[in-house]
Amino acid sequence: QVQLVESGGDLVQPGGSLRLSCAASVRLFNSNRMGWYRQAPGKQRELVATINRRGSTDYADSVQGRFTISRDNTKTTVWLQMNSLKPEDTAVYYCNSVDPLGRATSSWGQGTQVTVSS
Figure 1 (cartoon, rainbow, N blue to C red):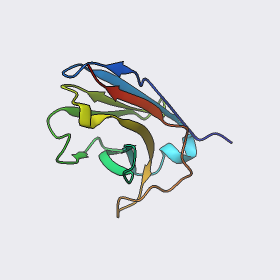
Figure 2: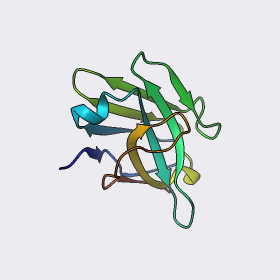
Figure 3: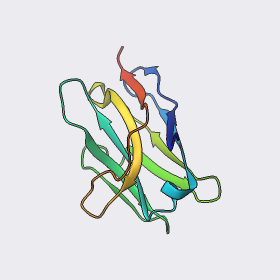
Figure 4: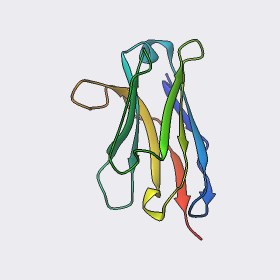
């Protein structure tokens, strides 16, 4: 059973913007927090943004002020608006539900590739 489907990744120039989407199963989405992770080549997966059911958000320092996470509880969808993109944002982006320690609670989806390059 597919629980997470990410989309919206693309090749974009530095300074550009992208909006990622994540469609989640109802069961998974009804957990308190949802988040976006990313994994760059040769690096560990890192948590970049989270949002709880009330809409409270938290961001990694590296994306603070550039990325915005949002969710629609009726559509069980989470978005990540990414502005002022930098080459170091290049990674595969994944969404998942997030436990209080920042760990993903479900198996991963296929992710969506974001490449920032001129």
